[in-house]
Length: 581
Image (tube, rainbow, N blue to C red; front, top):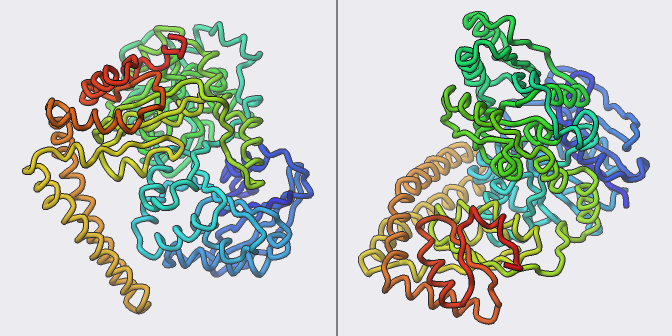
């Protein structure tokens, strides 16, 4: 099997840490180097000349193609420019491939899709934090949909991103697979193997570590404020903070360190290689990562694999990747709005208990270890399924008929399926239905939880009608832009304005809809209709366990458990339940 990988990011002499995650995807496959070609479309200044470079490495071949960067171009037009350069400089490598991996749907996926031959497979891999912006733009949205439609599999690094894509293109939801990122657990490992996790030098506990870009979104200013407060609360602890990386806020951070009088406690060491970062993680007790959003959050995963503790914000990716580490008391999640006191309290609580470092590390090895990850990637590259499921161990019914309930189980559903459980989820709306992992069976009780005639009227006039109006208006503006290119800028702006209004209305209506659903589930007469519908749907499935997602779904779960003669527990207790019980 010959593989070509097209990416806008890849390590270079100028940017040695850019796109290292793409390189790890390539390495994880462990293919014949002669059968692997990475094509790096490198953005360069438009007024300068750069040659096409060709290099050979132990994992394969690299073609680095300069692409003149124009900041005024849209992402869709940038993708077209990438396509032109690929056609001019990488046609031979692309034509020879059996499968092409495109890292991010736009620009790479859009650029490659039009160059594919019928015999070739396309695997798209989505990491981009800018994806919501793409999907909100009518032209980019249409181009992105065409790419997903052409793929063998659309791999995304986190379940939240997967849900976003499924909601945007519900008819293609089966193509979307949550894959994560590979972690070289031989590099990111405890100092002398997993057995060393049983003991920890006292001094290590008092060493804080940050690895990443010094930018606002990474929460570095809150990190420094938190560290200063920790030093104030524990003046004799010998606390230190090591800052790995760089960025536009570095001077501001250094000034703040001086203002706090912490020059002897805070060290800026600049960017470091993977091996060096792994060594730092082994020698520091806690990695603190207060990002506002992460599709995955590779740094926190690597830290757990190396034996460190982690404090991270609940910013999507870490909520999913650190579930095992949180359960093992080796990681703590703080809110996006966390104050310095919240962070220090989380650290104090973490270091007060040893936790189970080995179990936390194993959760990372099982989910993201490079060996198993590479096997799955090779399998999907051959046109096979990413997931290989064994015989069913249990049949679980989850009640999540409210928006909050469905949100609460968004990571638990794929995790339970990964444990070879057959999962059926009760949801209360179309959006929740299409966002749920497609391997699960979904029972949508939207019509049953509609409630009284008054509630149904409210739903129609204040939910369905506005949503329909926004959708039609947005599609009209998108059509005008497609039909008349000269008007595209104006139509796109109008489309964004209408879409923004729709999203704002949706946010304002969400709490009210939650109240309506919760009231329905609490009403015996209305709840009985839901119970009857669900029990009829799962009749003959042999449900072994009913799980309630949150408090509002508990009574429904209890009535269903009684109806189908199955035990009932809360979501937090699932890890302690086995089919033998």
